[in-house]
Amino acid sequence: MSPPPHGGPRADITVYRWSERSLTGRGDVGPVTTSLDREALLRWNSRIENMVWATQEHPGDTAPGFVYLRYGPEAAVLRKLPVRDPHGRAGSTLTHVLTGPAAGIDLHLALAACRSDWDDWLPPQVRQDALLDGKAPRETASEPPQRVPLDLVRRLLLEEKRLLDALDTAAADLPDEFLLRLAEALMEEPGAPLTVLGSPVDGEVVIHVLAGLLGRVVAGSWSFATREENDGAKDLPQFVFVRRDSAGSLQSARRRIDAEAAPGPGGPLRDQAARLVAFHRRRGADALTRLAPAQPMGTSAQIRDWAAGHQVAPGLMSDVTSLLEAAPRGDLSQKEDAYLRSPTSLPRVQLELDRLTDGQLAHLVALWRTDTLEGGPYRHLRPEIHTWALHRCLDAGAHGGAPDLVRELAVRPPEDQVVLRVLHERMERAAHRRVSFDVLPLLRTAQEIGVSRTALDDLMRVMVERFAMADLLSEVDRISRIAPDQARTLLENCIRRRDAGRERRDPFDVLRRTGFLAEAVDRMAPQSPWRAVHLYRLLLLCTVGESVGQREVLDVLDAAGRTPSPYLLQALADSCRRGKAQDTVFAAVVQQYFREHLPTRPDDGHDRDSSRRDTWY
Image 1 (tube, rainbow, N blue to C red):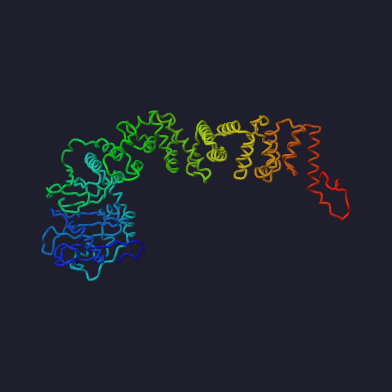
Image 2 (cartoon, rainbow, N blue to C red):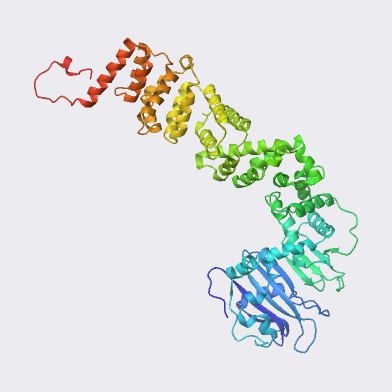
C-alpha cells in the first residue's frame, strides 16, 4: 500500500544490487531503480559507488550496515544488506539509498534509520521483502519508485517509534574506558577521519553517544559507516567501524582505535576528556547542552581552553545548574558536594542563576522547596535562588510578569530577610542609575506570592522612610491607574512618615496638580463613600498632620480646586479644630452644595451690577 500523499520536501530512493546492466550502463553492483533524474543519479553515484558494497559474508551474520554522508545542502543514508548474487556468490549487496536535503536527513534521522525497518516507509516495489522474494524485477524497474515524503519518514523514525530512546538504552553497554579513548581522539583532532576496530556495541550506538557528548563541542561532519570490510576505500565518512578480524588497509592514513587493545598513555586532553565523560554519564546529554560553546570548535587548543573554563573545581567539570538540580535529591558526588558546601562556589552560583531562563529558575525554586534543606549543608544557597527569582519577577513585572516563578514562590514564599534584601538591592540599583524606583512591581509581586505580613510591613516601612512624601503621593496617584489595591496599601502606609512639612519638596505641589488626589481616591474607593472619607483622612495626616487649623484648611481647599470632593470636605470637617477653621470648612460645604444644586441664573436681559453678578456659590 502506497503512503498517503504528503506536502513538504521529499526524498529520493535508489536501489543498488548486482545487475548485468545497471542504470549507469555497467555490469556489477549498481543502481537498478531510482526516483532521481539522470543528472542527479550520476552525481550521487559518483559519491557513493565505492560504498554500496556490503561487508563480506560471515557465517550467521546477515545484519545490515549503514552509512550516513553529507555533501553541502544534501545528505544520504544507505542501508547495505549482505546478499548473494544471482550466481550464488557471497559478498554482493542489496543497498537502499535515501537522498535529499540535509536539513531533513540529519544525524538524528540517520541514527534512527539504523534501528528501523525500512519496509515501513519504502515504496512497495523497492521494499526488501519484495526484492529478496522475487516479487519485483531484478533488473531496472519499468517504473521509477515514488519519492518518499520526508515529514512522514521523520515522524515514523523520530516520533512514533522512539528509536533514539532505544539507542540511549543501548549506550549503557558502551564501556567508559573505550568512550574516553574515542572522546580524547576527537578532542585532539577535531574532524579527523577515525576508524574503530572491534567496537563492543553497534556503530550507530557509538555515534549516538559521541554526538551527545561532543556534537556541539567538536567540529566535524559526523558522517559514519557502521559495518565496513576495511577502511581503505576513498571518500569514506569521518567515522568507520570495521570488524577486528576483517582485512585492514596498510595504506590508510586514518587514525585507528582498537577497542580490545591496551589504551596506552594518555595525551594532553585525557584528563579533560575523562571529566567530560564522567559528567555526561552522571548528568546526561541534556545537561551538556548548557556547557556547549556558541559554535563547534576546530582545534585542540580551543577545546582545551573551553574545557578549562568549565572546570568549577580541581578535578570537577560541570555546570552549576546541574549541581543545583541534583543537591535537593542528594545526588552529588564527593567532589560536587564539597564544591557546593564551600563559600567559594557562591559567585559561580550567582552567575549561573543570572543566566537561567524564567522556566529553569522556576524549576529550581520548586526543587529547593523541600524541608530537608532547612538545616542541610547547602541551606545558604536557597536564599540566593529566591533572591534571583524575586528579581526576575520584578524585572518582568512591566511585561506581563513571570507567572511560573510567581506560582512556585507562592507555594512557599521567601524568607522575610530575602524580600528586604531584594528591596534594598533594587533601590540601590535605581539610585546608581539615577532613575526613579518603581514601587508597583514590588507591591504586586509581594502580594501575589503571599509574603508574610511582617515582611510586607517592613517593605512599606523602608519605602516610606526612603522616599519624600511628594514622591510617595505621586506614586499613589500613578499606581491607582494600574492597580488601585496596591495604591491604597501604599497610601495607608504613608502615614508612617510624619515629617512631610520639613521636606525640601512640598507635597502640596502634587496635590494641587491632582485636585488633592481626587481621581485616585475615586479609583481606590469606587462607590464606597466612607472608604473615600478614610483615604482623605490619611492624606490629611500625611500632609498637614493631626492638628488642622485655619491655615491648613485654606491650603487644603486651595489644593482641592474649585469643586472639592464632598468626601474630602467630610474628612476635613472631622479633622479640623473647632472655631474659625471649622467655620471655613462648613462654608465650603454650603458653597459646594449650592454650586451643585442651584440652577444657573437665567439671563433675563435686565442690567445688573457686575460686581454682584458672581456670588460665592
